[in-house]
Length: 315
Length: 315
Image (cartoon, rainbow over all chains, first blue to last red; front, side, top):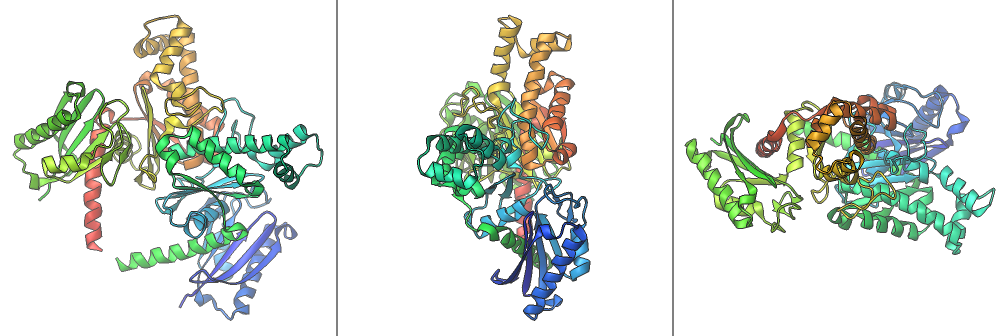
């Protein structure tokens, strides 16, 4: 019986590996610093070694593994399991990760974008549990998104859907790294918020923690920065709400922890800007699965694929 | 054998009715001016009368009808077949149209938004035939949209998805009828284009036909208006392309006939503003089904529902 799942979150900072049972109960974990393995080949070798060590530690053979799911921080050709590139990890252009890991570990492998997997996990097990239509937004250096539509992860024609951070909210806005102009990320990405804070607060070494502290303490400049930050997110989300009419929007990542008032301001902006039926029915929630979201999503992906296969055989 | 389909396009100006066979071959048609029946009850009675007359004219009984599909110009609760309201036809608030027509005509009825049905038709039979992910945009007084995602019409949590015309492209843009600010429609809806043309060309009685004529004749002011019009559409679509990664965008409605240069400018703007993988893979096409798109979509809706039912029974 194939009763176990391996899930991996390959991050720019840390790579985390989990062994779970079929009910998604976490059995054991491993973690290492991604930066210790700058060469792609060595990073993959380390992953394979740790997966084998997790399996050995629980006396589990390959034949007992339903599959391995891995999330990566960049665009992926999902059916082929090929990584197009990873913006924050060099040397990953056109990596056939599914093929490599299947050969190395000998189990079925599924590769997807990490924000997609976070969205899947939050929609099935987390803040949007039970919602057939849920949108996930992650706030950080980059602003990412994932879409669960009609109960399934929506990937688009080239599996690159979900880029909420690159929706333009301004016709003549500043140039964005993606090549666009006035993208949401260009206003609410960590670096841009910190730059604004540095200028307006006249503090050279401001951090997001310090900014959040100041805002919670009632500092008007810091509050103003958060207010404008939340408004920009709300404007982009008003567009998403009008376009996709979701039930739940889940927001995760660093800046989402800056306080409840950010969530209120985002929801207020959606209420003021989006169309009445769509605005009324959408709820904005904080992500609840934290750092495990991607890992749980990767495990869910394996499980859903196995279930789909079984259903096909039955019909 | 249920071998026939009835489809209806209830429009603000005309209401059109078709009888088709199961292969979507058009057998006969009827049409009348919607404005001749300002009372809801009389409009529905006229529709029912004409449907019966179409059936009688072809010697078809109710038991031979697979179903009746009807598109309406406003938001619909799709499973219930209830019209929320019709912005351009008074007196339709909360109309249980499915229930009323099923009782009157005695066949299975499916009610959906007209732009959704246009999108379905263009994606299955028209300009986006064969594309699993296609976005439809209609240009007119209002700017509407419909989404075919992973091969099916996507309606969202309250069946109101697809409002591309109400995606904000400007933070502090002008107020829109929908309650939002800086919505695409506020820049490219017919009335706003004409207002701009009137001001810039200093022509009181300018029409869209005249504007198009001037642009085609090389008038720089008219060309500038179209250029800016196409750029705004391109900016909003760059957001849609980054978010949904579609293969095809189909554009229909009045202003889409203003000339090929509008389509080129829209695609150029998407290429310049959207993310590389998404921009490269999307094609922008003119709608090809014209006025029949909604009627063909309504017929497809009936057919798809019948097929789905049959598949369910088989498994």
